[in-house]
Image (cartoon, rainbow, N blue to C red; front, side, top):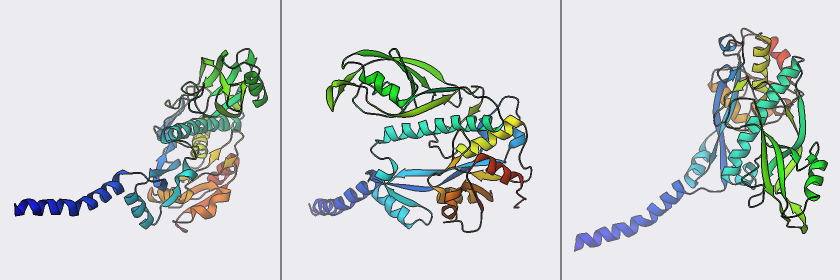
Length: 343
C-alpha cells in the first residue's frame, strides 16, 4: 500500500513538469526564427539546352535561410544562438495560415525563376513575348475563387472581357450580376515543376455577392497589374521545396552564362542574393545576415547583395567575406568579370 501511495505522489509531482515540457516542445507560439541555410551551386539546379553544366560548376551560388515556426523551447534555444533572428509571426506570414504562406512562397519562387529567365534573355538582347492581365496576389477563403484560383495566376479573360489591366478586370467583374456564371481564362505556371513553361487554363466560376454591396458581383481575389513572359519551356530550374524570390539574381547570372556559353570569371566563385526584375533591377530580400553565414560556411568568399543591404550582410561575418552591393544585373556581371581570386 505504501508503494502505491509513493507512486501516486510521484505521479502528481511529475505531472506539472511533463505538461510544461510537452507544451514547450509540441505547441507553436506566434514567432518565427530565421537561421542560416545553405549555399547551393546553381549549375546543379539549372538546365539549359546545349550547355554543359560542368563548364559553369562552382561559379554562381544561391543561398537560402531556414525558417522555423517556434515552440517555447525552440524560442529559448534560438534566443541563445548567435546568428539567429526571431520575428513575430505577423511580420513573416501576415494574415496567411501556414498552408497559404507556403503556397505564396512557392509562387514567389516560380515568379523569380520566370523573371530570371526574362532578365537573362533581355540582357542578351533576345526577344521575349509578353502577355498582360490581372495577377492574383491572394485568394480570400470561402469565396467563389477559393479552391479554383491561386496566387501567381494571370487572369487574361473574364467572360467576353479581355483583361489587359487592373481596370478592365474590375470592370469585367462589376458588370456581371451576383450569381452569374463566368468563364475565366488563366495562365498558370506550375509551382511544382522546374520548367519555365506555362499552361492556359479555363475555369467556370459562379460569382457571389460583394459583402460591401450585395448588388455587386464578387470573385474573392486580391490582384494587381500583371504580365507574363512566354519563355522556352526547355529551360529548367529545379528548386524543390525552396520558396521565396531571393534567388532571382543568382539564377539570372547562371542563365546568362549558360545561354551565352561563356563563364564570366574562370577563377572566382561567387554567391548572390537579391530579387530580380525583368529589366534586370536587383531588389532587397530578407535574411541577408544569415545568408552571409551560409555563404561563409560553404567556403565561398565573395557575396553579391542588394546595395542597400551591404551593412546587414556584415552583421555576423564581419570582414571574413568580400561583400559587394549591386543594383542591377549588368553591374553584377561587370563586378564578377573583374574580380580576382580570393583564395
